[in-house]
Length: 160
Image: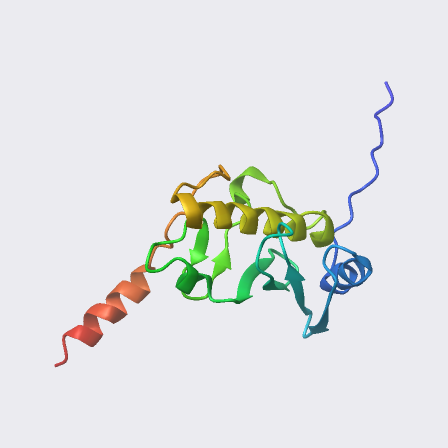
């Protein structure tokens, strides 16, 4: 019996992701690749009535990180904890659940992450008005502090 051969999937490098983003009409912006890390900045307006946001994507070849760099959405939230952020102060968006494989290095950032950022902003604006997150998904789990970090914190709090 003959085994079916499937084409091998290709992992997209930061340089290739840069090329895709540079050709994208949705992520019209600018960026660079330095030390094999892609940085891409673009403007996003989820609806014609929305404010314009400046988004930054960083990609090191493993997992993209997405930030709202302007405006300060924590100020728009007026003291409320914003849902689906990995980091409130850095305004790092949670766009997908990594354990479910929704995004992989075999996918184009321009076809996935960029569009998901627009959707996140859309749901953020609804949340600002209603205090209800309509975007579904799962809240990111808080990062656990390593034992080394906890031990160091204990040492720093108890000087000899």
